[in-house]
Length: 415
Image (cartoon, rainbow, N blue to C red; front, side, top):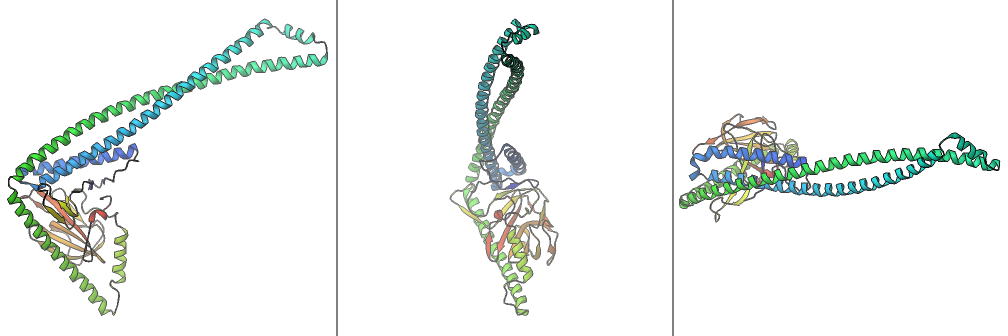
C-alpha cells in the first residue's frame, strides 16, 4: 500500500516532504500531521466498538501509523537542522572569541603606546618648555620644523585616544555578540533535547499502534474464510459499478455525438465542451477536495490488502473518510449527467466536464437535479454513514472518456 500522505483537514493540505525545507515549513507540516493524527484518532474511536471485525479499523490504524512515522521523519529533519545550526554557531563563537582576543591585545598595545606619550608629555608638560624648544632653534627653518613636530605630536596623541575608544567600542560589540551567540546555542541545545524527548514519545506511540494493529489482525485472521468471501463480493460489486459507470459515460458520449451530427459537425466535442475540457485539464493538481474535511483511506489502483497480504484489490478512485452528514461538493464546474443508485453504496452523482467526468458515490442525500449546471465547490449532497461497517466515506472517481484516472493527481496537494 502506498504510504504517501494524502490528507486535508479543514482545508489544510500536507505537501510532499523535502529536505530543503526551513524551520517554519517543518512546523506547518508538523501541525498538519498532528491534526491528521487527531482526526484519525477520532475515526478510530467511532469504529472501536466493532474493531474485532472491522477492516475499516485496520485501515485507520494504518493511516495513523503512517502519519506518526512521518512525524518522526520531520523530527529527524529538525534535529539535523538544529545540529547544523549548533555547529555553525560553535564556529562563529570560536571566530568571535579570536576576534575579541586580538582586539584586546590591540587595545593593550595602544594604551601602552599612549602611556609612553603621556609620560613624555608630563616631563615637558608646560608651554615654556615647548616655547624654549622652539626658541632654542639655530635657524628659522629648524624652528618651523619644531613647530610642525609639536603639532603632529599633539594630533597623534588625540588620534591614538580616538583609536583606543573605537577599539573599546568594537570590543564591547563583539562581547555582546558572543553573549547572544552563547545564549542562542544554549536555546538550540534545549530545543534538540525537547525534540529528542518528543521523538521518543512518538516512537512509543507507533509501537503501541502497531501492537494494537497486530492484535486486531490476529482476530480477523481467525475468520479468514469469511472475510475473503466478503472481499470477493466487494470486488465483484466494484466491477459491476465500473461497468455501470462505463455504460452511463458511453450513453453520454453517444448523446453528445448525436447532437453534433444534427449540426453536421465533424468535431468530437462542441466548442463549449472543448473549452470546459481544456479548463478542467489545466487545473490538474489544483482542484479543491470534494469534502471540506477528510482523510484518504483507500488509494487509486492495485494494492495489497491490509490484513490478507496475498490478496490484491483494485480501486477505481479514492475513498475519503469524513464526519457524519459531511457536505459533498463538486470539484469543478460542469453539468449533472446522472443521478443513480448503487446497491450497498447509496446514491451516486456523475458530473460532465466536457470529455472528463467526476463520480461521487456514497451519498445519503442529493442536493442537485439531473441537468443542473454546478459550479466549483457547489454542494451536491451529503455523505452516507454505514453503521454496520462503521464507516462514513465518499468514493470519488475521475474519468477521461472510458479511461480511469488517479484522482490524487488532480486534487490540490493530494499526491
